[in-house]
Image (cartoon, rainbow, N blue to C red; front, side, top):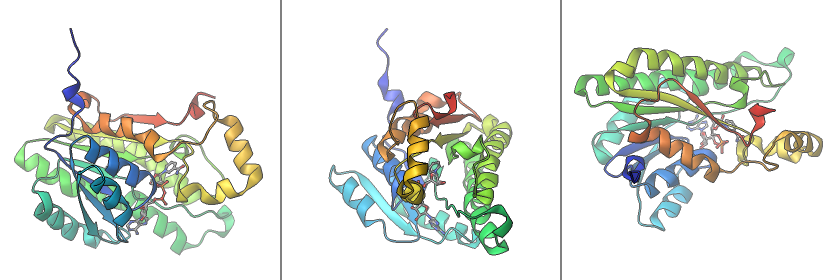
Length: 255
Ligand code: NAD
């Protein structure tokens, strides 16, 4: 039998991706538009780079400007997304921040800022879309962006590790509650990827060499490397995949 690759198509779907102006979020937006989706990019700043990359192949993209550090923006995001393309079918909780600091020196402000964006917003934005999906009974897809620090402790990043470890648990919990409504909640755990998030690590020659030496694939990942997993989890091909976190890490976790 010839496999029906249409199951991977996102034609006719609308995807909302947070943190769409740079890095992995931008990569996911481009991949989704390429797979046929209308894409809504949410970001604090203009997503002009992302829009230009998508316009280059005639894809469909609109931005929503919002600061994701405060859940009060959620109704506005939902309303603007609906106005742009009607029903949102896919939510990617990608926006995230990292603050590097010895655990003994972490301030309450820094702790809260990381947890607010990486964890609190992920839950309440997911809740907002899932409510609509349960009401209209047409299902939906949620993809959370986890991390290697969802599995490992890391060092000098206690709030980040706490938030990314929470993402794996939350992904499982929400899948347990929402799978019966045809809502797939899954996550992707990127390895060490070349984005702003890892700029300081890559600048530190010693840390950079240590990290690279541990990656079986022998190179840092790129936003393009995450495209296949992100499309798969957003597509009909993943309809029976629930509560799972897929690592895209060049083999890091296998070591
Ligand atoms: P990045 O810094 O380029 O992207 C972070 C995105 O989040 C940006 O688009 C930024 O605008 C957005 N963002 C941050 N604070 C925001 C706010 N208050 N309001 C709105 N948007 C906000 O880095 P990235 O690597 O592309 O990060 C994307 C996700 O991937 C994050 O959740 C990060 O933790 C995760 N991740 C990255 C790596 C890596 O190696 N780069 C590894 C594992 C996980």
